[in-house]
Amino acid sequence: MPSQIPIQEGLFTWPSEEPRLLGSRCCGCGEVSFPVQKSCPACTGDETEAIPLAREGTLWTWTIQRFPPPAPPFIGDRESFEPFGVGYVELAEGVRVESRLTVNDPAQLEIGMKMELVVEPFDRDADGNERMLFAFRPAAAA
Image 1: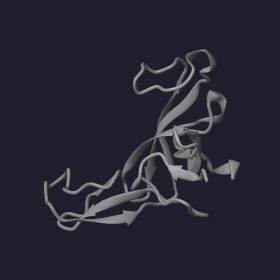
Image 2: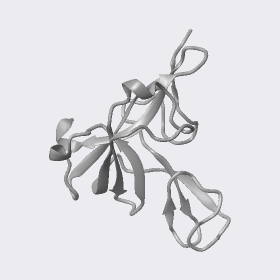
Image 3: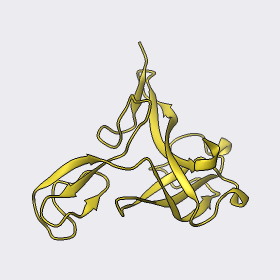
């Protein structure tokens, strides 16, 4: 029976009432990374621990993707493409996460605004499972 599955294992907790992105913290220097890393990009230490990241953050920068990206990685019908927001959200841990945004109207986006993590359908796999993708939305939309 088809179900909802993450677009990639290990990116976020799923299923979950309050999904969280999964990052890593260096046991040596404390650097936080997303996604989970086996070694530290700051000090090259090889001891890290997986940690759940904050669900809320601040919109650091953004743009609207108004044309279909090249294929691959774009999948889908180019004729029915709808523009979407893309941005970097800075989380409390200091890591900036590149993410799809649920809003594609520039009038609704502002650098510095509060954002929150959501999980939403992306597409279906060959078995009919709904693949779920993380995104951020303006916190006021909750």
